Length: 245
Ligand code: GLP
Image (cartoon, rainbow, N blue to C red; front, side, top):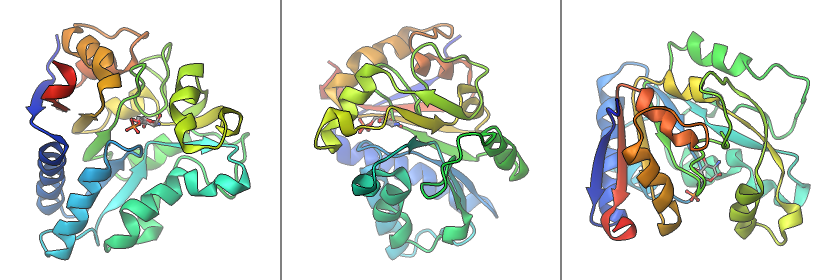
């Protein structure tokens, strides 16, 4: 059964504010909050609202730990500003009081040892008693994190090859498509489903098909990895009315 709660928003500003408030309430209600964070253009507005709330003393990240969803493998040196670690520093971490030592990524940009057992990331999350709240964006092909179509619902954090459509979608941040990394490390679908609360933000008309699949899904369909969320008990999805109708 699909237990997801869907919230139709008027615009990006409203969506970002509502999701940020969810995060603020969660952070303020827990002694040592553990956050799951995503990159991409969709959550930027949420992070801006969180920064404002921090500046207005409505929230502090001092006791927070964060785990990011995914990270590229094999970024060329000239594109290190496209790393997800860089993105998080630019868009959130450097503006708030989070201790950078408590911010984790599934792979280190400076030390990409591909023989590493990436499932240790899941163990590390477990050792923090799991993610209290996780924000997700979504790819045009329904990927969450970098779990591409065909991903197993039992998948843990792992190395993954990006599909042609994801490389194409992400080429907007690179000079040429050839420069886009073809691999990444991502939390798996099982890793994601272990989060106590999940908030998915769907932004952009190109996400319409994926959102409609998610709305109508009754069970997991590996062709649309986002449908794994129907297996979760506490997921909310925020989308913008005019982009979907
Ligand atoms: C990338 C990320 C995803 C993100 C997706 C959508 O592929 N790995 O986590 O959700 O892009 O990005 P955007 O929000 O820019 O559309």
